[in-house]
Image (cartoon, rainbow, N blue to C red; front, side, top):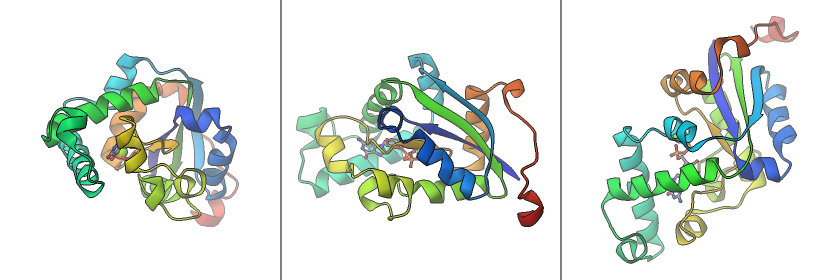
Length: 192
Ligand code: GDP
Ligand code: MG
């Protein structure tokens, strides 16, 4: 049994997709045990995307750099550097701006393999590459090209914890223990 965090990002909320997104998790059998709508402060965003997760930002920097190369965009000219870690740090700032740009809807879902299951329903990070039937594949066409050219984060509607370890770090940042409910879904008897 796992718990995982999802955050419908500001583009998902302003496009009126909150209900549609939550429905998909509920229909898959995942149990919503916490939920709220809020404006994220820069401080909160900064904890959610921690600056000291070096491997994360170097990884995102490398991916971004590869995208720039594939698109024949000049990273030095556009971003002032071709160092993956420095580019990761720049993307991090775009992400902080994005997640704090409007209200978000955060929720915790619980179920067997909840982390992996939710990631599958969300789809690939890049909407252009995410399969039809997934949230990102069905409701966004944003791409590394558009985002990097616009010097902004990829608008992919939703954040979902990437691993169980990430979920255990993230959930307490968003919800206190009293905000997380315990109850039994009627269909638990069938799939348990
Ligand atoms: P996720 O777990 O699927 O959301 O992806 P990551 O944890 O790798 O990245 C976090 C977020 O950063 C993504 O959801 C995107 O909004 C954004 N992002 C990731 N890679 C890139 C990139 O190459 N360029 C830009 N502009 N944004 C990116
Ligand atoms: Mg992630």
